[in-house]
Length: 168
Image 1 (cartoon, rainbow, N blue to C red):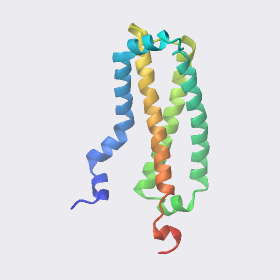
Image 2: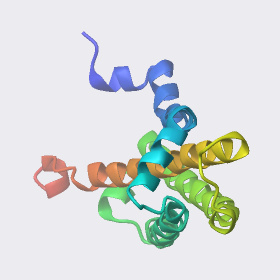
Image 3: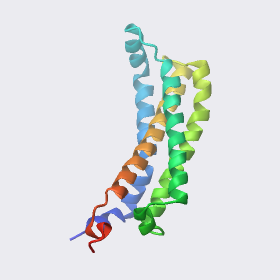
Image 4: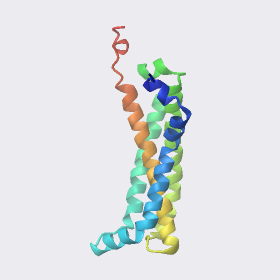
């Protein structure tokens, strides 16, 4: 019988875990490319301003990146008891790598979004459609990394085994 730990250590599972934010990004970019004109028509017909999405997402990622950077500084310098207990382990190394990748991608995204905020392309056809598809795909990559960091953090901090409570 195969245990959960053995399944997680299989190369294909590790690859899928590492590649999943990028795969989600490519899939959403292709979806926007395929349906972008219909989505834009829907939004404009209701009086919405789809070009405001660039600034809104930019703001969210900027604030989240600031919090993530501050959080990473705390984790890297002080560390909690749980993080100190797993320091040097594969789990800890993967967690720190995930946080670093989330920071790097969010900073790239912030810089990458500035021309979009200025030009406000709409996914109607041609270059605008490609530009919005690429931006949308990369947005999903960034949010997937943020989700992974938060999920990993709660998983690590919610570890309530008896040995963590001092009973073993």
